[in-house]
Amino acid sequence: MARSERPPPDQSEALELERLRAEHEGLRLEHEHLLEAQQLIDKAHSDFVEAYDFAPVPLVTVDRAGTIRHVNRAGSKLLGQSGAHLLGRALRTFVAADDRRALAQHLATARSTDEHTCDLRLARIDGVSLPARLWMRASSRASGFLQIAILDLRERGQEVEEMRRLIESERAARDASTAKDKFIAVLSHELRTPLTPVLAASSLMVARKSVPRDIAAVFEMIQRNIVMETRLIDDLLDVTRIVRGQMFIQLRPTDVHQVAEEATEILAQEVAKKGQSIHLELLAERHWANADPIRMRQVFLNLLRNAVKFTPDGGDVYVRSWNAGSRLTIEVEDSGVGIAPEVLARLFEPFEQVDDGWSNRSTGGGLGLGLAISKGLVDLHGGNLFAGSGGRNQGARFAVQLETVADEVAPSSVEQKAAASVATPELGEGDDTQRKPRILLVDDHPDTLESMIELLTEMGFDVEPARSVSSALAIDMGSVDLIVSDIGLPDGSGLDLMRELQANGRGRPAIALSGFGMESDVRASEEAGFDLHLTKPVDFEVLFDAIRTLNAGHRTGAGGRQ
Image 1 (cartoon, helix red, strand yellow):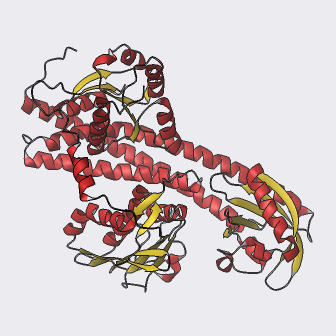
Image 2 (spheres, helix red, strand yellow):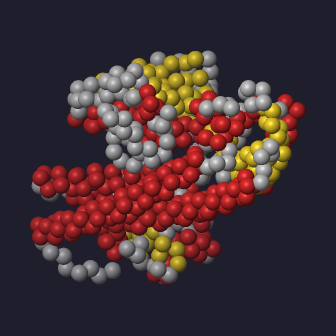
């Protein structure tokens, strides 16, 4: 493909810097728009929670095990106990003994049919027995949560009509929540797309030794802020997945000590800047659990970032572990500002910006999602996450509890040497007779395509660009080693491209790049024939590692779908 003349290197770098500054300003405006959208979401969430809590009809939410997770004021009054004493207790304990078996059957029916109504006798803690009608509705099949409205059959009349209106309001609120989730997904995609070329170009400028140190520092600052922006977007998507019961984890035997150590290593530079110290006291003898290592690392990163943020410069953070029976506890303790007692009950609520007048401990800014996400992820692992503090300036403790499994056998030194002997050489290296790996890069975003071409070329690849499905299909695949493709294209999608190539026997190892990163998007990519789905803006070290791995498998005949 013919290329236009480029300006001299110095002028080119100056032009590139000017373009990136303009794009950075655009990114700042997009960030402001995201915050405005988040304020609207926070207001809608607050209104819904207030409507639930002050609804005149008793409302209870139970999990898959029938444990009470939420109850409004009317529900607490009907059951004869405060909400704090009801949470965590089994609903069956408030049902007459003769009806408890029937309750289990009704709960199972409600989960399989989405809606169900039944009549039972409730037994309050004070001995009062009353007939009640329960309207059960599944909040989502994946989570197993049921929302239950309770009608005291001793009082009917106007309450029945009020119940109907409440159910309709709940349905409208759920529809609004679904629309909000779709909006967040689309918004995240639109925000991710312009971040990709900026990250690619800044990564390229940081890597070039010819770039002066003061200019390279500007690009490093751009990289840091892009990562921060991406983390905000990821948090929005993660909390949406958790609330809707759509967060999936991949469990496998995992060394939890190793995961915690990796999290501390990631934060080493941030800790050093504050003159702090992280002390590892991982003394548990049983420290393997069935866990998703990526998600558990996310949990420890959130807890450690929280500890580092609220600990003064020069302070200490401790990471300890111990066993109690078959359970493993890993605790993160800081010497920071502490948590007020009245804050602890709300600490893990999504979008909760706790301000107790002296610590603002919940998130220290941001969207108020880190701890909520951590709690949701630990719950998905069948574990528990606890918080505690002695009060003001007494620091805080966050403890993760997991069930342990038998230790995995570490690879022997012989196995490690064997693995090293077949390690893939760096792409683009080797003697002059070795052909550079050729990548078909498909993306319709001009800035992304140009910056990715430049970055991949500099890393030692031959790049064949395409802007559409039709132009990609017209390329001779005989010389292509690997495909890197966007999903959204002007004349179809990357999924259509992969299906067509697979159908014609022209399939190659392929990586999908997309601003959409929900589990359903990843599954769709895999089903179409992609080997890997990476979300924009991509971490280029991750991208290069993926290319190396897939290309090595393709050359040895093990990679790619045919």
